[in-house]
Image 1 (cartoon, helix red, strand yellow):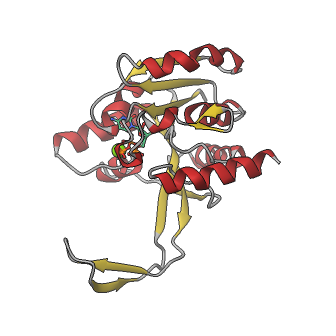
Image 2 (cartoon, rainbow, N blue to C red):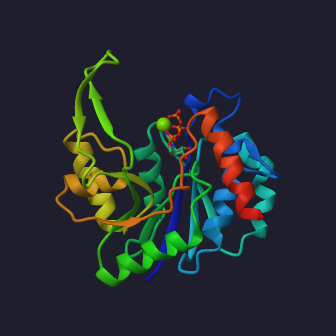
Length: 230
Ligand code: CTP
Ligand code: MG
């Protein structure tokens, strides 16, 4: 099957509180986006990459010349207001019979072997799936606006949903459109599929596959990427 990686990279990174969108911050000698691209480029099953960026993204111009170092064909499309709009923009650039592997630009620490495992599992079972990790901490709930505990939530069978998330393009497009029609809250691809009644597999990811969201995460990702290169 034809597999296309879609990389949503059109966010502003408000929680990072940096001067520029977080995917263009540098770790070592590359931007976060370039680290992410180079991991996806090494995944044997991926045929091409669709990068979703903000319109008139001048930061992209600075790194575009490095794209020739990638072995896979890459094209860029313009994203939208919310992450789901950016994902839809990417999906619209795909052949209808392709599998879409959606992976956040802000997750440069993902391992090639975990992505390959996800793809092998999904294709062999002919079902969409996501990388996920089991919850290890004790989980608490509070009421809105308070830090006081109201209950302990059992962590049995509780997982963190990560990316990449892999689905047949036509299924993902139809599921997102349905969830939008019903104003359903959709925070990842799997939640749209679930809303539409589809089934989703989870593949256990290495715990280092963090999403860079705040300045703390940037420090942690720097340690992880440096350790990888040793
Ligand atoms: N993203 C996107 N289009 C949007 C919003 C987000 O392509 N309209 C991308 C981001 O660039 C990121 C990924 O989706 O790679 C995950 O989103 P998130 O971590 O929330 O990034 P931001 O939205 O940029 O950050 P924040 O929510 O702190 O503003
Ligand atoms: Mg966001």
